[in-house]
Length: 281
Ligand code: C5P
Image (cartoon, rainbow, N blue to C red; front, side, top):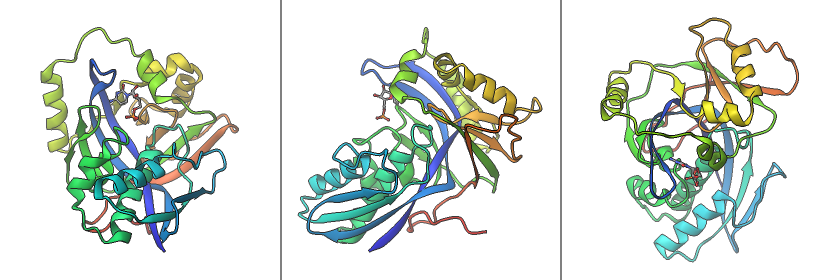
């Protein structure tokens, strides 16, 4: 039995560049893995089997973990079976990439348990078939991502940083948030070049173009953001397609006491060739 940590991600910035003919959107986004995460316990078994600590999650073939297992078996023509338990801590429908991280971690685990020795770059390439955010997790935890998210440019780790994740009750559906985007014209390539420079020079910028459509769907999220921002320079940004926010450096004071979960976290990175490890103080 192996136990693998499966970290959440945040998008330090997320720019939507253009709408594509395949229904997806081209993005320009800086992704970072954080210490909030799930655990995947995996062993070889006599049939593929997934159990989960959170009964709200489907454990059938629709779960991204089992999609990852099916993809691995198809690509490697493997007859192996996997018994997997998912201990869930990453909130669902939160824009934290929980399902994508679980899928990447499952692919890593299948490779390890079968000793197939598929290079990480190949696992990364395969993984975009599962979802746009999955390839990112095969970087070392800091990456600038383009295309629909699957074009991953790995970056050196950012300086250590603490943050808080605020998750209001209720999630947001990623397709619904993208559908609500009112996209009139593509962003200038000069702006995208600036994003790349920003990542290269480790200059900070924090924003998320998906906040606007998310706030249209759930106006109370704008009110939450405002209540979390005590000063103009406080960094409080929605992650991915929401509904969670990350607050950098300072513990947020939640004036409304109920209906939120608060998770302290740090940036983490993996040390290649290892997978991610839980954060240790
Ligand atoms: O790839 P993933 O399964 O995460 O995407 C879920 C949905 O989110 C897509 O079907 C699409 O509607 C939307 N999406 C998008 N542009 C992206 C990523 C996702 O429009 N770059």
